Image (cartoon, rainbow, N blue to C red; front, side, top):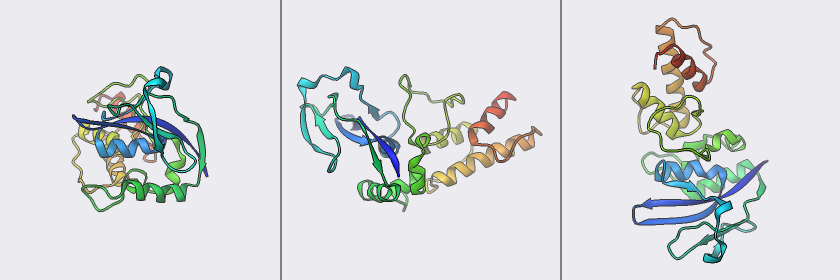
Length: 209
């Protein structure tokens, strides 16, 4: 079991279509993988204007309602409390809700989280910082490489090619392997069990990347 936090997000599916919904925080990275980095944003509840919105139904039984204005842009105050979930049941629900990856034969939830237990770790939810801005580079001070997009960005920064069929675990292994190879070639002492983030920090400290 784990405590899942609910958030209100705005999803821009394309330049002409925006909608909003209440989701669990761990769904954010799935939506971002589907619609692209920067196309999913968390609505600031403190600046909500309740009077302009109407309830459009509920996400599912016992959970917060989805609210939208006439333009489909949601900034209303909604219940964003926590709910205790079973990770196996939630993993299955996410598989039903988000279906298969559009390009490879793997469920979206498995592509992002690999296994149910990963849902319990808040670091894997990959929520944006409050003041996060678009950044085409790799910020080694903030990037924990916990999402598919972050790992791909790091691989591209290092010039490491990857297949579109790779899932999160394969991408992560490729990133760690590339960093370990780089440090080994440069004869820099390192811990081969270290995280990708720590290996990147070490490589950066020696001006290798």
